[in-house]
Amino acid sequence: MTRFDLHTVETAPEGAKAQLAAVTKAWGFTPKLHAILAESPAALIGYDTLFGLVAQSTLTPVESQVAYQVVNVFHGCEYCTMGHTYLSRAAGMDEATVAALRAGELPSDPRLAALARFTREVVEARGHAGDAAVDAFLAAGFTRANVLEVVTVIATKTISNYTNHLTHTPKEGFMSDPSLAWTADATRIAAE
Image: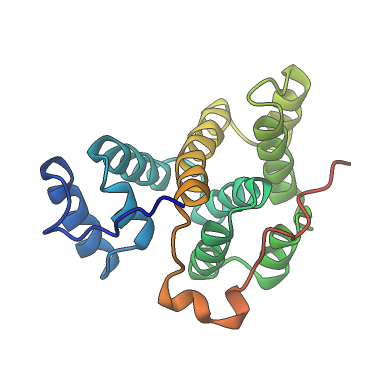
């Protein structure tokens, strides 16, 4: 198995040093995903830029986390599902919604369920979800901007989920918290 380096600001390629330093400052530590992505300055900058843009979107922090978790669970990404469980709680997501998403189920809240369903349909269909899916999402109170923001979430998580699968990103220390544990065997969101 090919091993990927966990870069530091000192060991990262020149084009990744400033971005990795900014990430480390923002998070208070260097996430191992970012340390691996630093091998390619384009990958690190691309991922971190998209992640930052989602935070600036019109989706609320809880809505963003719903969409992130749908993609993480769909892709079976243990690292990101655990990380976004932590971030979902920090955003104020209720435990029932956290548990539903981790189990691959729709949240009980109708708006969040519509978001989870639409995100799942888009990622499953690789973008070919169709007009009926878009219309149902809009009818649930979301906007055309939200349609595109869901696509941005999917792009962001595809970078991190695929990177974690290919590089076997080690878990973060905080992921030893038993309440964050999750395995790829968990059920994916069931089609209705």
